[in-house]
Amino acid sequence: MAESARGAMRNVAKKQSEPKGAVNAPRLYRIEDQIGYLLRRAHQRASAIFQTTIGDPNVTPTQYSSMVKLHEYSELSQNHLGRLVGMDKATMQGVVRRLKDRGLVDSRPDPGDARRTLISLTLDGQRVVAKLIMNGPAVSRETLKPLNGNEQRQLVELLQKII
Image (cartoon, rainbow, N blue to C red; front, side, top):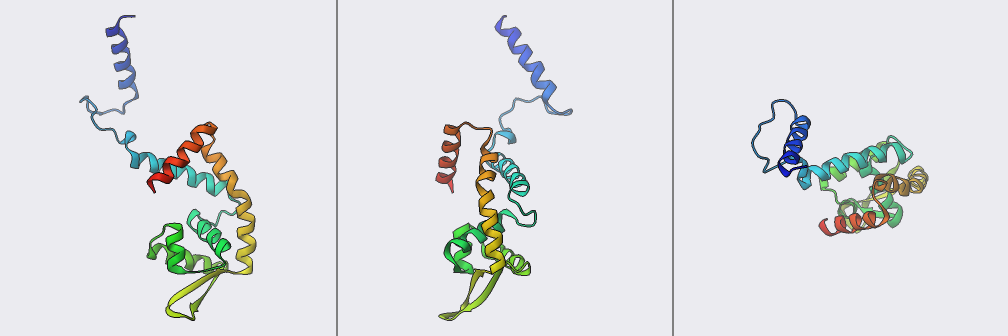
């Protein structure tokens, strides 16, 4: 097939995939190729998989990561917990409040610094996080399922480099 015929066929296929009203100008910028867009879409997919796989539809990914860190450290200041899980102060306050409302965490003033609040899991929180942690690897496996083993490792390594 001649090169011009192949090019014409690509143009027809491209026009068929474009929404009606799309401008016929050359594409210099496509949102679908931008890292922020791709990360957001990947995050949406990962969050949906998390919700259906983790084992408690009322626990969000941010709540889960907070509970896992509290399980790991036993007790942390609210600020330190926020730093460990990559959340700003306002987000961390909301996460802790919702976990407290569910009876999964407790807080107390830090005896060494009255400005700090120490957070720990309640007995119910320990039971819940122990169950959820068992499902955590399944969330990652399902999220990474479209990739082969080498691609999975590479994606994780690359993401670790940019965070």
